[in-house]
Amino acid sequence: MEKGLFRVKAPLAERLRPRSLDEFVGQRHLLAEGKFLRSVLAKKKLPSLILWGPPGCGKTTLARLLAKEIAASFLSVSAVDAGVKDLRKVLMEAEKLRSLGREAILFIDEIHRFNKAQQDFLLPYVEEGLLTLIGATTENPSFRVIAPLLSRAKVLVLEPLTTEEILIILKRAFEDPRGFGGLKINVEEGVLEILARASEGDARVALNFLEILVTSAEEKEGTLTITKRHLEELSLARPLLYDQSGEEHYNLLSAFHKSLRGSDPDAAVYWMVRMLEAGEDPLVIARRLVAAAAEDVGLADPVALQIALAAKDAVEFLGLPEGELALTQAVIYVALAPKSNAAYKALSLAREDVKKHGALPVPLHLRNPETKLMKELGYGKGYQYPHNFPGGYVPQEYLPEKLKGKRYYHPTDRGREKELSVRLKRLLGAKTK
Image (cartoon, rainbow, N blue to C red):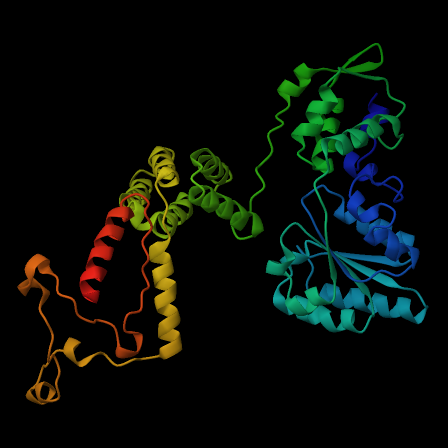
């Protein structure tokens, strides 16, 4: 038993790396007949590529297999620990290969970790064709890869593996001699399906879980047995995918805000919890909540902004987990509040006119006559003090002459704003008489 399992030092996921594209599982949208990679491989020439996808979807393996398919030398560095000095060595190797008439593929794992200077250093060698670049990243390359390098590479989006695809890989582990082939292992029905679902599309995680199960399984008469009870002992919980400075951060915040705007309290609470469980700063969530209350609820329910701000204060005062309840209450209130972006539109329209017309002069009747000269020039002349009139209102123009009669605020008939709409119509009616 020990000879079969423990003499191999490499992890199961490494031992079972596919040796050809025929063994590769997943990414059919790129590798099926007629799809992009199959088409370019038929010509035995690869463009520079950025492989963007979640962990465990096959980025590194695919890069190796692509190099093998076109008989190119595979040079590899990791952006985690490689510097310009390491890149110089790789480039010298590429020069040697070119002198021998061989093509070089440079694979950079986690290319998003390269800083701008490192990417700038690499750019001219990619441009002149000394090597073909294949970069792998789990983060949106438009955020992390410089535009000149990005424009010279084809970005391929890799997808998480499906449960069915993970099952194929897990079953292969029991058949392949590089894995557990040759060992007598009984697996209770349903175990592999649970493992496949728990891995959430990550083949490496699935194989790591399986290796732990096999190495800790009970042995009786030369046969290993794996049951669901073993799964209960093995924690299958995975850290939630999240990067507080990357795309997933913005994706979840966007989903949260759109759920608030769409008046779906259940979805809004769900996305809030997703972020909190992944370790997001609760004040980041509170700021977005305040923004939604101002932008999307607006004057349809002015109380929403007060509640959102109160939740922010509660989170600052109480911290977590106590502050979560105040945040949840505010999220539900803002989601269910009537919606109006009339104030937001008014702001945008007014800003457009400010940019378009510049510093239009303040009408003379609105200027304060601070000096005798200013009074002689007509400052304040004709201004009517509203409190001297019934209802505290008198029709007069407050906008610059060029914008006379312009409207920016158009209230809706939702929530409290309906009352504002009625009042505004009454005031405008008096103004036109």
